[in-house]
Length: 304
Image 1 (tube, rainbow, N blue to C red):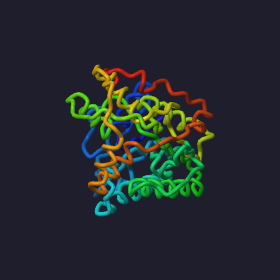
Image 2 (tube, rainbow, N blue to C red):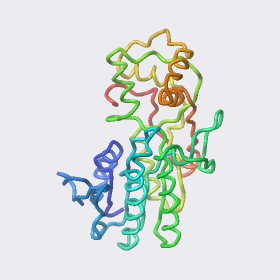
Image 3 (cartoon, rainbow, N blue to C red):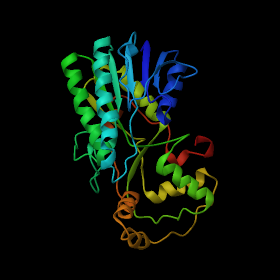
């Protein structure tokens, strides 16, 4: 990789990818809503603007991480935003890449594009189901269109589907759990023996660079996990340990959550997500030589 273009460079994963590529003395160019102090910047708001035609001049590799990710259960009113960023901007960037002679296009999708998990089964890339939510649907639509562009143009297209990503600067439900544990209001979860896949952000960055550099990845989709499975209780206990908090020797009974879930469809959705299986296999990625270096059980507070 001689010159790399990154969208979503100011995000959780993008910042880590930038730092890793900078260590390798790679020439870097980013897309952002405002000028970046360190890197050559294409200023563009994907919600309302088209990426300039000259954005990819001299670029040989694109990492497309930018996305609209707020996957609310009732998000139909925002479908145009999901589609504008996750599909239209993604396809437009790929078309520009072809026109500009870009050699490799790496798209960060999501396991949600593959559909909901199957109880007792770790889903692989061949287990394509109904994508989960509007976020998953738009990510899957973008995947299909990108692979088609790659086939017709000859541009190398690879797709990465990360499982739940953790590490320094994490947001979303993991951060909410950590805040709740710190402040003492997050209830100790019961052990229900569900199985969830995760990956540390540093390992995901390693996987992205591996996929970008390996010729075997053209036209392929890869799921990224750290190779371990965690129950929701184990994730809770790991976060207690990370934060230096004592692990409660008791838990709130599962029946309490079942009762709460009956209060509204939104709460039912949240409880189902909290205790459901989200198990994925990264054997295909491992076949390229990928091996995760971290697991949630080995983390401490400095890792977050």
